[in-house]
Amino acid sequence: MTNRPSISGLHDNPPESDEFETHEIDREKAIQQASERQTDPLDSEIPRRLRFIVKETSVEFEVKVRLYMVIGRVTNSRDRKVDIDLTPHARHEHGISRFHSYIQVVDNRISITDMNSTNGTYINGDLLQTGTPYRLRHGDNIRFGGLELKVLFIGFNGE
Image (cartoon, rainbow, N blue to C red; front, side, top):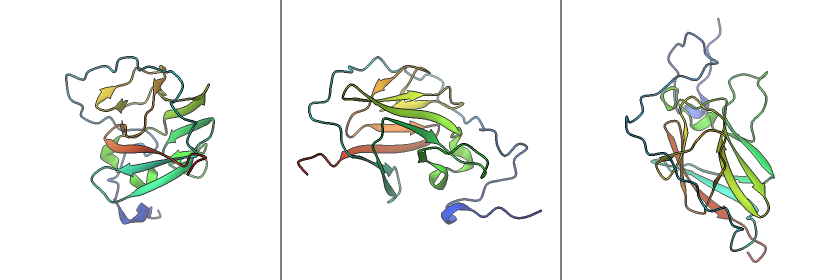
């Protein structure tokens, strides 16, 4: 049996009965469901990149905006790849699903949709309804299970 290396030294996962399953985390009992957010076109054009800041750390990373970006974690080399891989930032107790959410750009709108994740996706503390797109805005706090990130829109044509 080989030891699995910890990613970036950020965590050591405890032994799991099924290392590929997402573990449910404790959630607050009274979670407010997110209301539908306006999905009118952005005031300016679509940004070229999204910057994510991992809350309570100094970690930041950017991704190039594409029409469809799956957010999740990779458990092994046989997994389907995700576009925004949270594996380096996710500890066992965060409860991030392999295919947790996706960000989509349609008609000059950026939205985020939960993909029936085990522990939910939140915008600014409100739980997203599975399968429903919610407008994503510059400065939103997004939580995937127990991992919270701030999203910033970066790189417009004028920059």
